Image 1 (tube, rainbow, N blue to C red):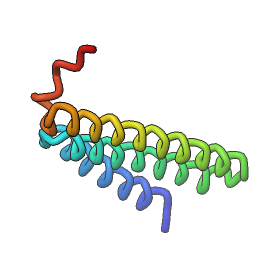
Image 2: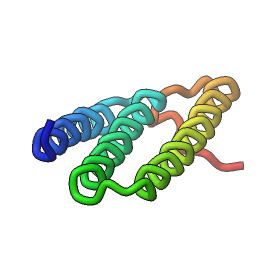
Image 3: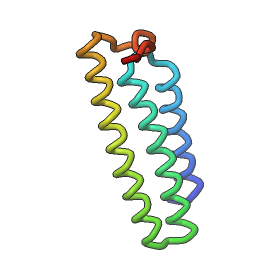
Image 4: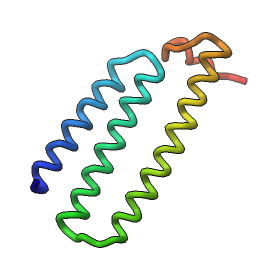
Length: 100
């Protein structure tokens, strides 16, 4: 697999995530689209590091980024779950009044 093929796959994943984030109204689906876009960026960064400068420092940095992304998405899903339980709001239009 070459750098071009890997970047093409990353671009396709990013496009699917962008479509999912912009076209959906359910909060969880929007977050899943955002997660796909972040994964595509991580894949592109990993491809650049692997094909241009295969050093272990880049791999460690990618693991740290993946761990941070996992924590961020877990917190986001917890907020979406709490919002749904408290206000029965699962659409993005219903969740616009997040005061207090």
